Each structure stands twice: as structure tokens, then as C-alpha cells.
Length: 433
Image (cartoon, rainbow, N blue to C red):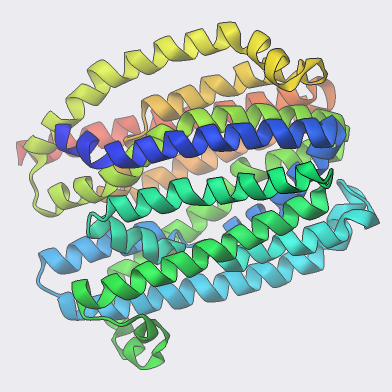
């Protein structure tokens, strides 16, 4: 397990740095826009995210898993087909998502938040969906080649440029949703450019694939050889469709039932708990590659040895810090964001229960994918989505943002704790055999 943490150490460090920078950005934006404006900005961000997730096939996980499989089994000739197929899946689904978002903008601005004056900001931000087309392949290739320095530099560098851009608008008193949308879309295309440059250098050296080969449709004559890949993608698509309800519709539901101010409180609280989960997500990002390699080699005994420290040391550490966060959150939020955002503290504490579970069990999701427990994962995602949907619709009208937070936090707990049972059963069976 030391190897896993060593591999992820650089990514965690860059992630913590980026989190600190974006924390400063959230303070600037929240104070500049106020609770109501911050709520409108939250809805503008949520619309493309939820549409995109309904069209997501989890290309990054599928590509990573099958890169490992093809290398291990000596089928390197299929890597070009795999990467090209993943590119077309990602590009076409993002293009469709962009068109759908554009068509939904008048409805969202009229029925949820912003009004007609916000439609331009909705449209500009929608372009960020297209700007992240290469990200799944970039993640898979750099993770496979252990190029964590390049990943860390991009992960830390983009937030710096983003915050500097916002500070520039702040100096001229121009921090509003329109300029925020422009900055975010520009950062997405900056990421696209840098990822393309990194991939161009890596693809040929590592797999004898050129960047322009991703556009070569002739390689798709070997699509039938990717049967397991497509099976994984089908489960990934259904899982993403269901999980998107939990991940992103919370703000849209809250915006429909309650005021823009309350959406602003909720958005602030959710941003804060998401920053807590970022460091663990970096380790999960790295550990997926290592877990996939161990399972491909059927080295289950070593796998169990590596997981023990995460259960006996990491889990109680997260519990202690979550308790401290619950106690100090009211004082920190009011001090940093101002008295206007004080109601966000209770929402933060409710969400922290779910995010604390996700952080403590960050290894569960990558292990589930590596073991291909796709049906179990889908069943638990559906169970969590049902719990969230019922809680959000029944509790939000009465409890507001707290009711929405209860539904989201509960869904996270169901998904992460529930999958521990099939994981334990699969590992026990594998060790006995």
C-alpha cells in the first residue's frame, strides 16, 4: 500500500493545492455575487453537468481497465482500436449533450433560475462540455504510463490561471455570471489544448499510436474484439444515467422548490464538502490502475494485504477529522464567507456525513470496477437514487436545502457501504480458490 500512496502523493499534493486555490475562488465569487447570484450560478453549472452525465459511458474507467487487460494478455494491437473508439464515443456524446443543453436553456432560465438575462451565460458555459473531450483518454494514458508529474502540473496550473482571470475581473468590478461563464469555458478549452499536447508526445512512444490516429475510422473494423469493453460501457452508461440524478439534480430540484438564496447556501455547502473529498479522489484515481493490475494478475492475497491499512488506519482518521469539521463549520463559514451565508453550516454538516463515508471508503469504487461487480454497483446506485428522489421531493418543500442534503448524503452512504458485502464475498471466494 506504500506504493499506492507514493504513486498518488504527487497528485494528492497538487489536488490539495488546487483545492486551496479554488477555495479562495469560491470566497471571491460568493461575496461578489451574493446568495441569490451564487444560486443562479450554481444552476447554470448544473444544467450541462446533468445532461452530460445522462450521456456518459464512463469512458475513462473502461479505457483504463482494458488498457491493462490488453497489455497483460499480449493484445497490444487492440490498443489503437480501443483509444480511437473511446475518442469517438466521448466526442459524439459530448456533441449531443451540447445540443440538448442549448435547447434546454430557455426552459431552465425561465422555470428554475436566472431569467432571460442569464441565457447568454448558460450558452457560454455550455461550451465547456465540448472542451473536455480528450479528458478520459488523457486520464487513462497518463495513468497507465505513471506520468503523474504531467497530471499534477495540469491539475494545479489550470486553477491558478482560472483564479487570476477572476481576480482580473474583480479589479474592474466585473465579477458576474456572464464573465464567470466565459472564464470556465475558456479554461475547459485550455485544458483540451494542453491534454492534446501531452497525448501527442505520449501515444506514439507508448503504444505506437499517433494523435491523428484517434480520428481514423478505419480501425473500427476490430470493434467486435472489444466485446468486454462494450459490455462494461453498457453498464457504465446505465450507472451514469442513474447516478446523475443523485449527483446533479439536487440543485435543480432545490431551485424549483425554493429561492435562489437557498440554492446559494446549498451550493456553498456542497462546494466545501467536495473540496474535502478531492484528496481521497486523487488516491482513488491512482489506485484504480494498481488494483486493476493486481486483479489481472490474480494476485488476490497481495491485494487484501494492501487494503488492510485503508480499513484500520485511514477510516478512523477520516472519522476524527469529520467530527472536528462538524464542530467548527458554523464559525468558519461565517468568518470566511460572511454572516449572509451562515445558514450553509447546517447543510454542510448533513452533507459531511455522506462525503465522510465516501472519503473513508474511497477505495471501494475503483475496487468494484476492477472486480467487475457491475451489476451490484448498478443495483446500489438505483437504490441510492430512489432514496434520494423520495427524500428530495418529500423533504425539500418542507425542510428546504437541509431536506435535499439528507437525500444526497443518504444516497452516498447506501452506495458505498452496500457494495462492501459483494466485495468481501468476491475476495473471500478468490482467496479460497
